[in-house]
Amino acid sequence: MSKGKVTWKSPSNIAIVKYWGKFGNQLPKNTSISFTLENAHSITTLTWTPASMENPVGVSFLFEGHQNLTFENRIQKFIAGIQETYFPFLKDYFLFFESSNSFPHSSGIASSASGMSAIALCLCSMEQVLTGNLSNEQEFFHKASVIARLGSGSASRSVFPIMALWGEHPDISGSSNEFAIPFSENIHPVFNTFHDDILIISHKEKSVSSTAGHHLMKGNPFAEARYQQANNRIKQITQILKQGEIDAFGLMAEAEALTLHALMMCSEPSYMLMEPASLIVIKKIQQFRKETKLPVYFTLDAGPNIHILYPGSEEKTINTWISQELTPHCAGGKIIRDKVGKGPIKI
Ligand code: PMV
Image 1 (cartoon, rainbow, N blue to C red):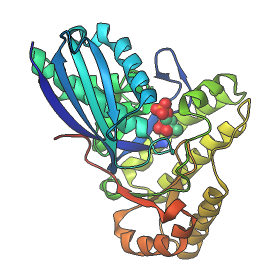
Image 2 (tube, protein in one colour):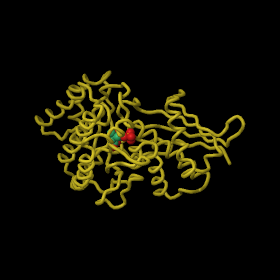
Image 3 (spheres, helix red, strand yellow):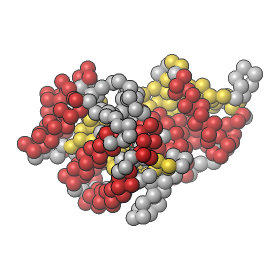
């Protein structure tokens, strides 16, 4: 038994075909696919110490240098739930996590995806150091994806570079509800260059959490049709990605974002996470695309912020337009310039 420390930087991701609705122990009602991001990330350090009188078995969590009891309780519960099955050695250790994000949490950017994937990666590294297991890279990231999923479904996709797919699909061999699979081998290279500029429309905490949103799908009268639609869209998008059809890709990203928010609006009770500025920006993007014929599209997560998607070849023109036309609609003029990323790194 020895003391040790590991740090992982793990990215957020943006779903193109969205996961919305779950069952059992964090299993998705439909398949989803996402871009892994580069700049929106969490950096998490895990220090483990053999339990003693002064440091009894337990978990402590510091977020951005401060104790955050909401996060700490969530992590403690998460670890208690996975310990026996996945990391039995944890019963002899005190775990100290310190984590920070490169973006505001609970504002619709998937902070749980980067945060939970970073924690999962740290735990897998701890296992590797203490037991010698998981020395095979594929095995390592596979387990990290399973563990990340148990923390937050979308986090399962953050452990792979470029693109990842999560959820069993009859047409995709190796796909599973339990873990995500890397998808970068199956896409046209133009998608490796994609940018995702995140317009921060509001920093405020979401009024309805994703957990509550997934739960509301249980009573949503359109739920079954939605799951079917998502799985059909996965079938279409795999072809679109392979062929490099940018317009079809972008239009599907937009349709998915609007479907997600429509599902929220027709939940019982109904709720809305878009803000007036979200709609203004969406209309401006569509108008700009119509006028210029440039390949620029939007998507949204479960929040008001707008992710602008476009290929790297258009960076200059689109950046200038965003700065001039869209910055005034952002809270404090804030935009996170992001792009498709290479996946997590141990630092
Ligand atoms: O992983 P969760 O429980 O935070 O759910 C995330 C759901 C969406 O971000 C809206 C869609 C997705 O697939 O990431």
